[in-house]
Amino acid sequence: MPVKIDVIILSYGKSEELRAVTKQGIESLLASEDQREIEFNILVVESNKHLSPYQYPNTATIYPNTSFGYNKYMNIGINATHNNYVCLSNNDLIYHKNWASEILKAMDNDPALLSATPYCPVFHKNKGFPENAPPLQGYFGVLIGWCIFVKREIFDIIGPLDENFLFWYADYDYSNTLEKYGVKNCLISSSFVTHLGSESLNTMSKQDHQKLTQVPRFYFSYKWHHKSYLKYCMEILLYKIKSLIYG
Image (cartoon, rainbow, N blue to C red):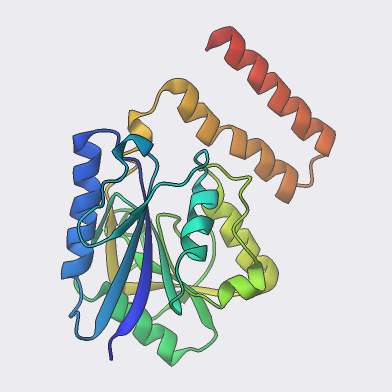
């Protein structure tokens, strides 16, 4: 029997070009492993509700009846799936041969490893991390947010993803949460997944971009840097005032 892995992909297919990015990622995912050994259950959580009821090929595609939030949509995907292994993914990824089997091998060798980071030939190489090295334990800086491979039991320890993070800082919060609970995360540098780079975010309006990037910064500082709740509320209020004035 093949090992079953739930792959949750967040997509914003508002243009044919962005839909093509998602399709390319799905195609590379399906081609990356021998399906007699590993079976991917692909769930696409699509933000463009105008596409409904369109289904990306070889997936189940859902359209949440709620506003977008990165962690919110990931939680919807997590709750809609059930296999023991879960991969939380952006849509702008290229999965390379045997990426998943390399992570499974590392997890089999180390039962304490509940969270794994594949090696991005762009990001990790530029940061000086060597390829095909032994698993490297670490958190933010080692961990990247666009592809996180976990054992489902991790959520029994850390709980659901914090839905106050709309987009940016979601990975930083996840990393800090793992560290807080002493959950092991490793970079598996024999597992290759290339991140093409914020394809959907780059097409957004300035106002939407700031909402997804700046507002989470205020909450992150409140949550992890122990800033006062009053200061957090004032930062949000000032942000909303500036948005009304400057658009």
